[in-house]
Image 1 (cartoon, rainbow, N blue to C red):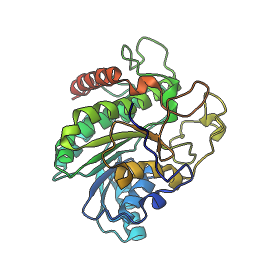
Image 2 (image 1 turned 90 degrees about the vertical axis):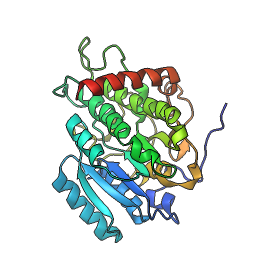
Image 3 (image 1 turned 90 degrees about the horizontal axis):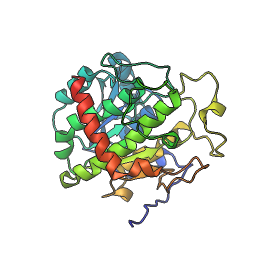
Image 4 (image 1 turned 30 degrees about the vertical axis):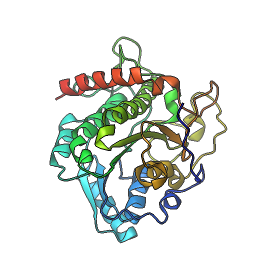
Length: 313
């Protein structure tokens, strides 16, 4: 059994604290969903450390405005903007095709949560399509750029919500059973972890590390826009006892996996509070579910994702 990874940081650490003293000059990075919340703070922290950062957002004008704000805040003039709609296969293809040169860090941060029942034009359930399939197609499309970089890293943002359910391999789009927004969210977040498990296995020889993380319980990021009550409903399975984090604290685990030398060579793992997570214990909203780390499930999801993303193009 492999030893769990620990770091000196914890639940209250901030992104700035994790990256203190780290020089990312010359490292090229992409952060999806970086126009606000965790994504913006992740991008700002990476830019502050000297990285070239591409702000990927659904609206180019908004992404451009955020890139300009981060440039002003950090003094880093290598902060750029690009249009990316993860629910639109054509947009994902355009982004990956337009990318030139190596890519050192990809943070798959964008996400939606507990939406009403919605489907893409291709019939994909929107949370699965956005949170997983869009990021799957993006990362696979950028594989050549990641492989061209020196020890590239991919970070897949998941959630403790993954413990509410596995991937529904026989009905991922809820065409056979009634739609449940929380089960759909759980499926997409489980998929994020399974992607990290399989990509880590497939791309180890390319020097690409792929890890997943739970940023924590954070309110006010825009992720809960489809919820009509504040933080109490943010824990649909009951009281967790987990303290709410600030956005700066929520971005800490993302930047740890993206850039900290403390996790050099670590791949295929799931982190929370800047530590590798323990196995999930029923009744506790922490840890990682066994089905989310299962290599058989990971390979099965990869094959399904290849088929679905190919059919969407």
